[in-house]
Picture 1: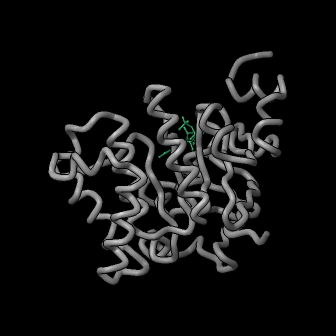
Picture 2: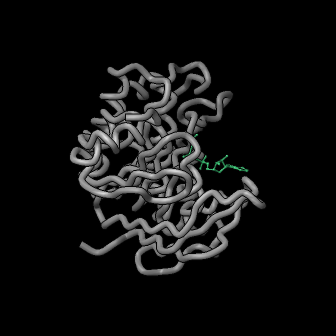
Picture 3: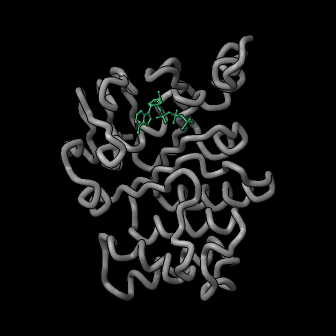
Length: 246
Ligand code: ATP
């Protein structure tokens, strides 16, 4: 399979702080890949570099290249990258709390690559089919929903832009195992419909169920790469991943 996302020699700094050094990551079209690793490893920074949000956090690409569908994107602004099919679900379930669920979803629709009304309606129907509970909450302010429902709104809003690549930053954070499982089921269905996924996770359960391949990151570099299950079965890798000494 061809790589939809190809990151090569990526070096990123926040002023004098080096956050990524010579990172190489590829994600094949239609694939699902995890970035695992302890706090501060650089996982969020890598997602920001791909989505173009890096500059809003004071970060800068110092070296390397990011290609999406064979085209260099590392100098494009974030809105342009969304139009090309890259959507990011930020860490911490970012919804517009005062806006209704419906308005939150519509906010994602404005950046749709295929913006005609019937197509937007079809995507909205798909989001409702993936997360039926949102159908009963459409008119409620998103800030009043449970954590799991807010995460569904955040994922649904990202889907409204018809992404080819969905970047997910710790979607399971702070959610009960049952809720994580239902979000995992929805994300698997999204992936099976052809949306490529790059997932940052601390939950081994979600990484294992959703992604076939993973990278282990530590202090801004890639330490290991391989099938997710095999990587997480390795004692030394688990110790590094969990941030504890073996
Ligand atoms: P976490 O799971 O804690 O979010 P992470 O693997 O996502 O960790 P990053 O958040 O990408 O790691 O952080 C990588 C490094 O960059 C860390 O040393 C962090 O302190 C630093 N860093 C992250 N964001 C900024 C910022 N806006 N300004 C300065 N340094 C930053």
